[in-house]
Length: 192
Image 1 (cartoon, helix red, strand yellow):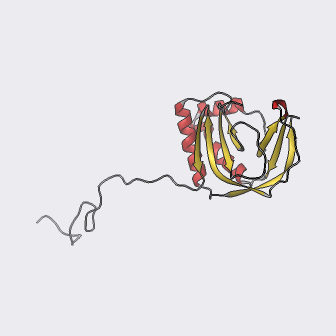
Image 2 (cartoon, rainbow, N blue to C red):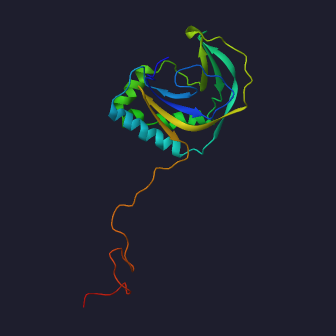
Image 3 (cartoon, helix red, strand yellow):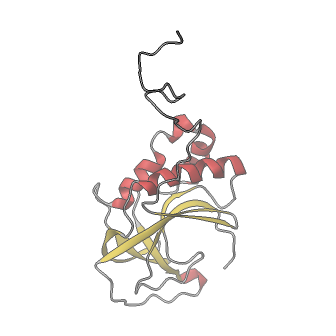
């Protein structure tokens, strides 16, 4: 295993009973942008976009666990709800909607890296090709998501669900009276 995660946006679940013998620990990939890191401007754009997605979901958002399967006879995965109501499907849609218009460069990278035409939310337990032996596990009914992660090369940004970006007041503080510049007692007063 290495510390290079490629470029992707992931959901990070709370600790649970599902084993995960993979790079980065247990996660649910929302969007994969390839094995290479993206540049700083694209990473900043992706972090801003992922932050907007994370703000719209409550902490501990549940995703229904469906079962265990093998992908390509190599990866043992835990399948998650893939209906339109699934939080993973909705978060992916929010992350990628209008990306083609808002950031054509990042969209081109995503389109080139995307290998599967249909999104299947899952968390990978391990890869047979990397020495993992498939196993029988007791699955929880739900996984609870605690954060969205933006992984880029060796950089990992974690954005907790439900935390709004702090808003800072810009401008003059209000003084007194009816107008922000301090008009006095009478809104009809004049300088006479």
